[in-house]
Length: 120
Image (cartoon, rainbow, N blue to C red; front, side, top):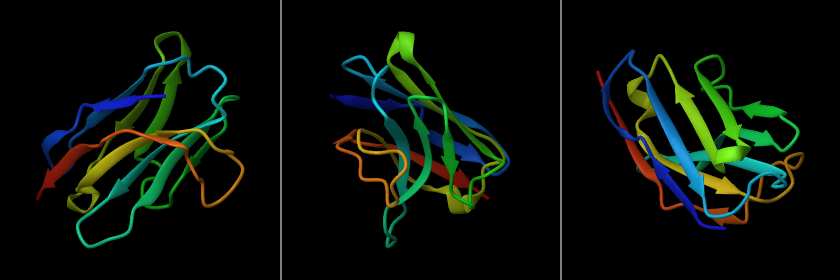
């Protein structure tokens, strides 16, 4: 499975962005898909995940501001990010595979990432 992220960019604090992740194959049966991010000098963290059945997980740092969704017909995963803060600045990665119920979530396939920068 190849994953290609898009939608990153520079936005002011309080603004919104929507990230997209296009998969090269059908995502219908992929149990777990997620968004991770890594800021400079920090470890990569899982911020949102979604199961094939529609269950979701959000990290506390983004809960209530970010929404993960998937369009199986378009083989695309999304991350709607609202009320962005400077601390959301990071490289954002789409990932797929693994078991949604396990933590840490170990995805098998990764995109190359898209940069999100939030200015204050």
